[in-house]
Image (cartoon, rainbow, N blue to C red; front, side, top):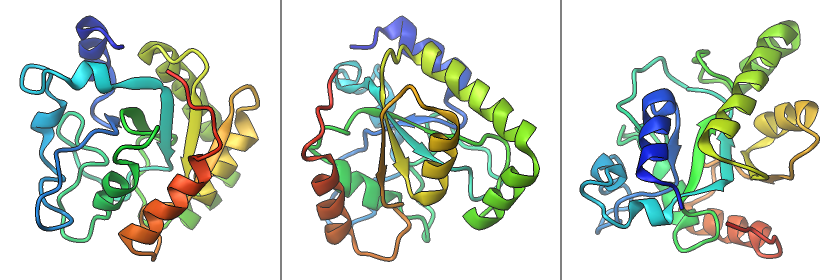
Length: 198
């Protein structure tokens, strides 16, 4: 379990681009309450700290848009075209719920992931600096031997190119063209035989 002191430290240092795989309960519509960040406030959600698990780290590639997120707002977007709701639907009641969520590449907004991959191939030092930052981030959140869960091919490639000492599991990106139910089914199938600890 994460202490309140540790939670506040992580919030202070990383919440502008990271979050947790905890969302408010879905109501009638699939996207309902997806952007409700009160669920990530331990003064409001008294069960929050017991749900958080830094030994599961879900990793996306980068911000798609150049926006300033509210603290913990990444992966909790209520923009009409955002697909964060599929992540909530897929992870609910799974071993990945409560995991830490972050982007491997910071401060490089780009909607097309292929363009990010091209940039990284041409700017290896930039990639390495982001990997160093990610390593520090893992240490700071208290992740000792985390399972890294890569959202899609591009981030999976970056992780496998640079990190050989941690287990990496690739799942489809939440913006893939499959519906929420098939997406959940595929994610659950991929994590079914994994020993995902606390």
